[in-house]
Image (cartoon, rainbow, N blue to C red; front, top):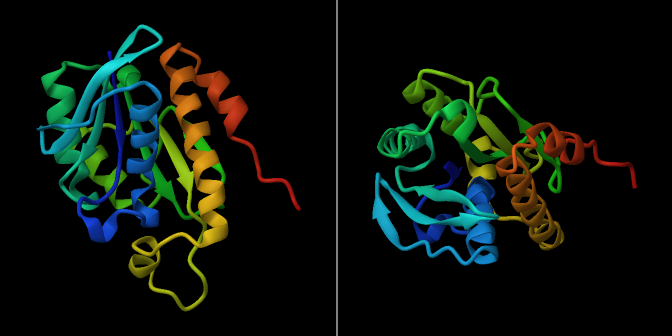
Length: 192
């Protein structure tokens, strides 16, 4: 069994913001594999189903980004999942351009408060994560305002493709091919 958690903030005002790209990927996976996301438990919206025969629990924490660890810890404890092999967390990353992914088996929070809180609550940074590029804030912007802002029309076109790539990366991870997913999707954006 795998727990696939996409990070974001609940509420209409946050729906299409940069910070909620993790929720977008969970929605893409749920749609692709016909997993209903209606159950509310573990401080999250949860959906259970199968991807290529592998049981999965999709999770969208309702704790707000900075407290994501509370929900993730409850879910992993409830399902008795070994976080080093059975947890995949999807979050935004300002150090990557829109359209880029970075998959890691473990690592620091890299300044991301949601990941920091998950690491705090799990007591470990040893879990798989997919970081989704949202680009760095423009000069003079407040970081909070930027990540809680919306994608431009041009970025929205890239977003659908990137969410689809992330869903495929999750599928590869579930087949036990984390290295293959890293090799395929951890690529630098080519100069245009």
